[in-house]
Image 1 (cartoon, each protein chain N blue to C red):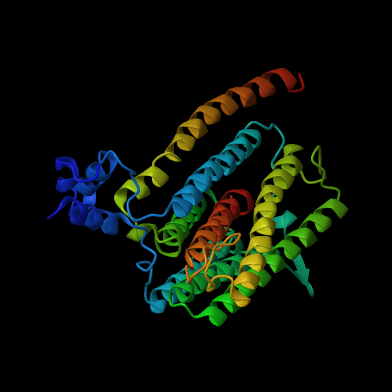
Image 2: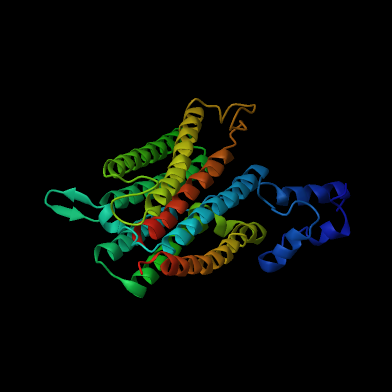
Length: 239
Length: 120
C-alpha cells in the first residue's frame, strides 16, 4: 500500500490548525481531508459562482460610478404604498426575511437528515422549497411593477440608464439560481419522502443506504443563494 | 502496526465526515435569529435615512456579519479543515483587486464624460 510510507506515518494523527493545513496540502494525496468529492465539488462550483456574481457587482459599481446622470434612488424606486404611507423597500425587506427563513429551515433539514429522521427532513426541505418559490414569486411581482413603470434595460424614468440593465441582470441571475434551487429542493424532498435515500443502491442524487450527505450538499447551494442575496441587498438596494 | 492496519487507520481518518456535521439546534436558531436582527438593522439604516460614511459603514458591517454567520455556521465552514476553508475564502479576494482596478477605470470614464459630454 502506497499510503504506508514514512510521510503518511507523520500524518497518521491528523494535525490541526496551520500545521494541519501544511500537512494536508503536502500530503501527496487529496488535500481536502474528511470531505467527500461531492461536497468538495459543490464548494468549487460555489467559488466559480462567487466570481460570476462578484463580476456582476463590480460591473454594477463601474456603471454606477461612471454615469454623469444621478443613479435612481432605490429606496424610492422600490417603495410600496400601504394605505396612505409609502414604505421604502418594503417588498425587498420581506423577500430578505423569507430567504433567510428558508436558509434556517434548510439548516434544520440538514441537521435532521444526519439524525436520520426521514419524514422531518422531507418536510423541512419541502418548506424550504415553498419559501424559495414565494421569493421567486415576489421577485416576479417586483419585475412586473418596474416594467409597468417603464424600467427597461436601456432606460428608465428615474435616472441613469444603466439602472435597468444592472437590475435585470443581477436580480435575474440570482432569481434563476433560486429557481434552480427550488426545483432541486422539490426533487430531493420527493426522493427522501419516497424512501430513495434509505433503500440500498444508488440513484440520481442519492447514494442510498441511509446516506443523507446530498442534503448537506444541496444545503450548501441553498445557503449560497441566500449569501448572494445578502450582498445584492446591501449593494444594490441599500447603497 | 502492520501496513494494512496502518493504511486502514489513515483511510478511516480521511473518510468523509458524514456524521460529524451535527450541531445543536440551539445554535442554528441563534444564528437564524441573529440574521433576522441584522437584516432588520440594515433595513433600519435605509428607513432612518442615514447618509454618508455612517450609512456605508453600517451597511458593510451588517453585510459582513450576515455573510460570516451564513458561511461559518449554516455552511459548516467553521468545522471544516483549514485546507478547505482557505481554498474557499482566499480566491474571492482577487475580486477585490478587480474592484480596485475598475474603480480607477470608472473614475477616468466619469472624468472623460464630464469633459467631453458636458454642455459648453
